[in-house]
Length: 183
Image (cartoon, rainbow, N blue to C red; front, side):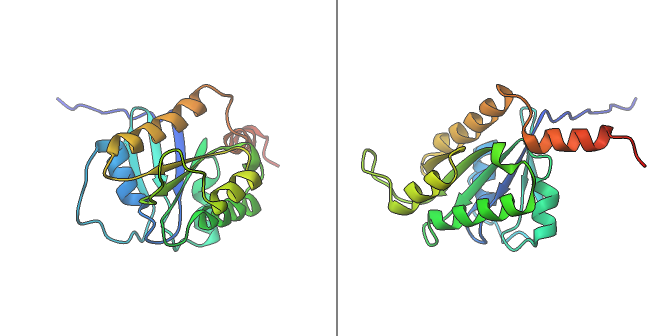
């Protein structure tokens, strides 16, 4: 007897960031609390699934076509940046996505400073404040693999935000294109 497994993804979230920012490791922790040691630089889009959510991780070296293809139709975007480049890197990614995609301003965005040391209660660094002022729909968190629960909490928070709101403008645009009569 054959068993067919049906996988339905209710939410799709694109994960972007610079090369070596830690996107793949971040997702291993978020989806399985798995602290793998041998993670190499990604050369293609990687997919992670958990609880009805599909996360698509875009390689940091991706061209505009690949970034557009993955982010088009996304319900939310997670931008991961590392300590070396700071939140200015996240700001640049958000500008890039907004240049490429119509409707990107209404999409839920979570920006994660992965491995960035920040003292609880101290003011946010200037680059984080600047990025948040430029992207008012973005939420920011400092996360680290020494506290995997924080990473899981961040991904759960963005998924919850998506499920409580109407479809993102990107996914709504995709639905309208699919339903439009062809000429």
